[in-house]
Image (tube, rainbow, N blue to C red; front, side, top):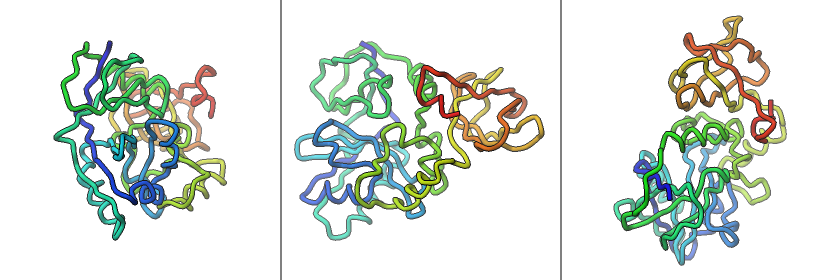
Amino acid sequence: MSYIPLPNRGVIMLYGLDTEGFLQSIITNDINKLNDQKAIYSLLLNPQGKYLYDFFLVKYEKYIFLECESIYLNQIVEKLNLLKTYLKVKIKNVSKLYKVGVFMDSNTEYQEIIFRDPRHTSLGERMIYKNEVEASMGDLTEYELNRIKNLVPDGAKDMVQNSSFPLQYLIDRINGIDFNKGCYIGQEVVNRMKRQQVLRRRLYLVNGHDILPGVGTKIINNNGEEVGEMRSSINNIGLALLYTEKSHINLYANKTAISVAYSTSNEFLTLG
């Protein structure tokens, strides 16, 4: 059994009479889905419909656990406390008590909080746990490569706070947005972009002829025209945010030649 610890993830516990209603009013996904499944993936946006945080929400007994990037943990606690105002919701950082990891094999034997990653079936099961896990360690690099190949962005690595629009990062295609739920922060902008159908920029899978440069590196075409920038990558496989109406032929990031990858075997890669 292959297990990968995720020390960069933290856990927030929410509970109280108004918890579900409070979350429903601010997140991009539908909290009511937790009645039928263990977890949902969702975002918190600013009023302009731009990314602030992404996270998993897990229902466990009378609690809802929010699993998020550690670097944003304190920000999220402060933001939630600011937004809840008078509502009966308790919010606690429990990261010292709980850890987070990923199982790449199904049917795990542990009796902790285990849920299948709702973003993509290939990303295995995640676990929030207290005690040490006795299992063979998996390869985080392989896990990240699998994420990238399936066009699943990592919020903290690939998106920019107060700048990135979720539809450009295909968040709706990885089960992070519900267009049928009620209002939430930034909803009008998200719905307007969906109605436009054609996005000015969006996420693509790219191959490099050499090791790809880091996040934020500008990408140009053979006319010297800037067409986008690099996001996360592993060796010569990566994600790039590109302008959809500009030529994607003969692209370069620094001096590394790159090409946009397409595949009929993966629905994400047929958006071309």
